[in-house]
Every structure is written in C-alpha cells, then in structure tokens.
Length: 259
DNA sequence: CACTTGACCTGTCCGC
DNA sequence: TGCGGACAGGTCAAGT
Image (cartoon, rainbow, N blue to C red; front, side):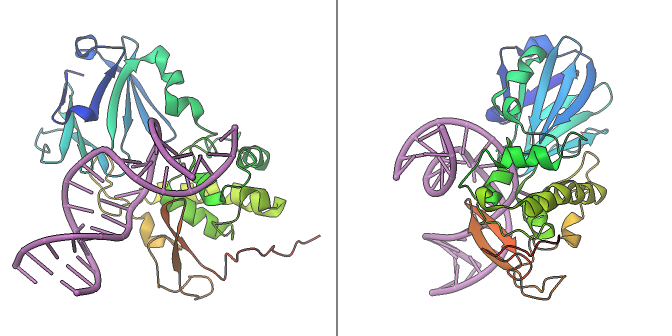
C-alpha cells in the first residue's frame, strides 16, 4: 500500500492508528466478515471496508478510474484501489488488527450462513432472540445472520414461503427449517450471478452483478409470481421496501405439516 | 429491554 | 422544463 488518501474525509477514518503507520506497509491477507472486507497489513494494522449502499471498490491498474464519486484511493505498487461511493455511507476504517474483533459491528455479527456451522438449530436460537419482531427485521439484523441485506432477505422469505411480517415467535419448526435451507441457497445463487446490481454495485473489475434478473420478488412489484402468477406486492416492513407474493407467502396461516 | 424510527448523503424518478 | 417529495442496497443513535 503505497498511499492512502481521501477526497471525502468521512469516508476514511483512523481509529487508534495513524496515517504514517500504514502507508508503505505490505498487504498480508484479505478476508470478509459479513458485509465487511478486511485488508490486513504486515504491521498488524487492518483496513475495514464497508460499501454500504452505493460503495464500489475498483481495481484500477492504469490509474484512470478516479471520478466525481471517488471518496478514497489506496495506492498499490502497480495501480490503485479506487473507493467510489455516491451516497457517502460507506467507509474505510483503519485500526490495529488486535482491535478488529471488538469493532462494534463485527463483535455482534451472527453466524456466517455459508459455513457448515450454520444449522437449523443455530438459526432457531438466533431468531429466538427476537420474540415479537418481524422475521424480516430479524433477518436484516446482522447479529441474527451475518451478511443478509434487503434484497436477499426478500428472496429468502419467498423461497422459504414465509410472510415477512410473521413474528419470530410465530414461526414453526418447518418454517425455520425452510429458512435455514433458503438462506445459503439464495446467497450461493447471488454469488454465482456476481451479486445484485440495482445501479451502483460493481465487483473489483467493474463488472455488475446479474442476480436481480433471476430474482423471484425483489424489484418485481406488479409482475406475476414465477410460481403462481399472483402479482407481486410491495409493502413496508422494518422501514424497508419489502416484496412478496401473498399467495406463496400467506400471513397468519400455518402450512400443513407432513407426518 | 425489545423494537421502531430518523439521520446520515446524493441522485433519480414521479406527479403536478 | 422545473420543482417538491418519495425513495434507494445499511447501520447507528435516539425515541417509544
């Protein structure tokens, strides 16, 4: 990392470390926890990068991608990483690696849904921490499951045939089981499609993701359900736009159990 | 304590 | 064409 600069000060923060301490340090490894990207440096400092809604982290080999939305730039031996973010919600935070685990967001993160430790039992226990909250609000909470956002929660609820307004306490075993299966299924499909691009999302090479092309409900308000042709409805749950099929995801009804 | 709402920002789209 | 308002992928502080 040959340089680290910000053109919007709030996008780059130093927490218990200084600019001089990290410039010139070699990047030793990179990992992800939930929605946070961790870039570890050789001197035991770490960059926590969160794209939030409109962030992009672009590999810019020919140093030509800096534009009006560029909030920070990480210089590399060859080229640079450009951090663009229209809405300025995203951030790069630099801290000592030993402080990473106690970061307020990371410390609370729930289980990684693609890890083998993610089971029905684990999900049931996490949902049990929210009694009267809607299942949608609970799944958006990063302490329930790490990494789910508004798009994937809507898709997961459709695949699991669960109404987003169901309280966590109202979910029966079969519904929780379907959610536990749907979560990794939907996420793997999202990853395979390169992610979900409404407008801004790009991968490091600048490519947009095509997952929304195969979405069942998100962004399909007024279009026919791919399963039953009922028109997709949009409501507001937990302050977020929420898409669902009222036939496939009935509210207040329990699906018949097989015995 | 559990849960919901407003704030943080800017750009776009819709109705008038 | 122009303008006000609602809304957009997330998280946190403040409010109920």
